[in-house]
Image 1 (cartoon, rainbow, N blue to C red):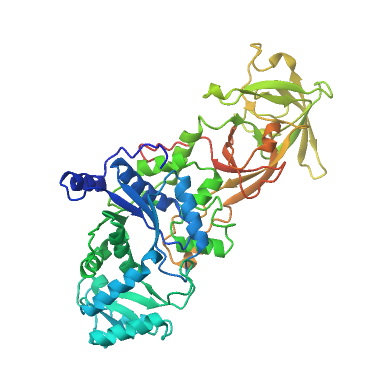
Image 2 (cartoon, rainbow, N blue to C red):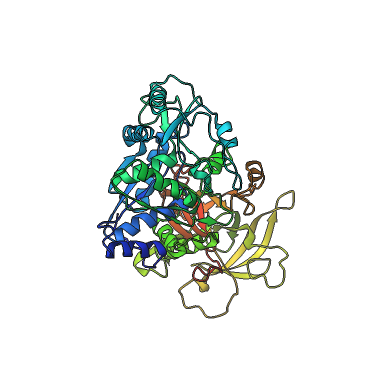
Length: 557
């Protein structure tokens, strides 16, 4: 990975690793990040990525990237490539790149070993029948009528399953454990199912595929993983994980440890539901800036440094909790405040004509690119008789305390002069379409003018050289925290106002801004040049985050 600070805060997993190294239980830490390539990674995966890679890095160990591709019906090479790109973009380099499908032959042989020792059998029950006979938390399950098949019959049937003699769902291979176990996961779980489908990696070589719960511990053991770190929903699966390792007689003995998954307010944290948003065209793809996917956050303008800092701050625990989305916003502000040039942009333009400014004259004003980072230097801003201001920086009949532009009032133009509104021009429908103002040439910014003060400062863009631009402003994709509701209910909670598209102007030099260039626009926030819709001469800016928030990341409120 690139030179980045490892997590400095302690957590229960780090204590376990330290103890294992100190006692000689393990000689080297080996972790893995094992996503299934059935969708794009999201911010929840970023927490796991940072945990696994930074833990191994801190203890001078190794981390593998492994694609758990055991379900050809849902997986795709597109997702494989996206996962690799996201991990690299976050700043990490894996020590080994593996696929579950790399081990299909060995997994098959291990399953045969289970059959030979009487620990697995071929079952003809359908998925529904298996579910119905599994029992409940208070009632034991029922033995399959095929549980007593002989080793020879099971070996023959399993070989014929591999040879493609049976249809999908006609037979499965099940572990023979205990149908009365208080842990339902040990009630003869399915190890293999039939799926006549083309696999992205192995083509049509296989028509039987291992279940994830069977494949995962084998993969960990084959790769020599020492600490298999997963989220709390797999805690009940740990006894089966250990059973597979032991009964398949694996030389390596990895151990599974669980931590709380990441949940964020107003955020969809389910790949299945994210895919639904894509399939239903609620968003324009997995990288839509409203999506919590890593590619969506990247397109919106988040930096890997901000995401890594966020993941370290929320820490690792065994207690589920809900993280305020403003916490993530805090870290991108912190990261960009010294990186992003500060410029002006008008998102909803209102034309202003400065009637006493010389016609045809264009003046070059000087301004700092970032007052907190003087090393970024200065820039020149054109100023002339015609400018644009924001529509909401003018009110014809303002309320008390309004200090921006209104008839007869004087304001400062950022980096420029004082102007006073003298006349309001309206169209036939009574809409304000233009303001006529005068300026005071003695009040030029930086001139030391002290003759009088004004209470309002507004930003602007010179009209003749302004670069046209599109601005995309985002709100949460969900109206409330309803992500865990049923699928139909989930779609009902989609925020119809999650995207607002505006047409306005930016300073001339920003007309040639490139995708992923980031800027702070005076009063509006931090923006990123969109990689999908930007065209030559017409940049599209995604708002990453507004400028201010009362949220304190340290206090979580």
